[in-house]
Image (cartoon, rainbow, N blue to C red; front, side):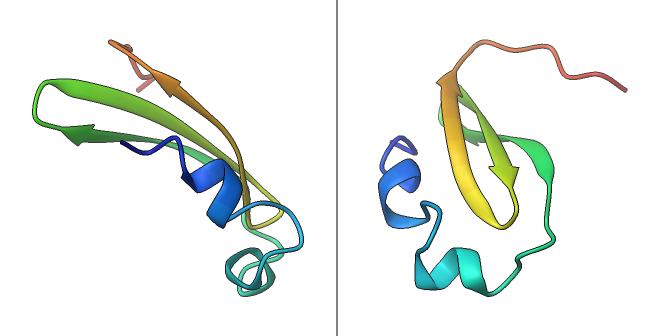
Length: 56
């Protein structure tokens, strides 16, 4: 479900340009599916389907 983010919010996209200094990892959940999203310099660089255990 979230895999398209690597295309729509890729480096050089308008969305990535809004937060060029944003670096983070977050977990999104849709139903029973977890997806780990990696954002570097405002762009979504990776999405990995889970399950995942996040660091505290």
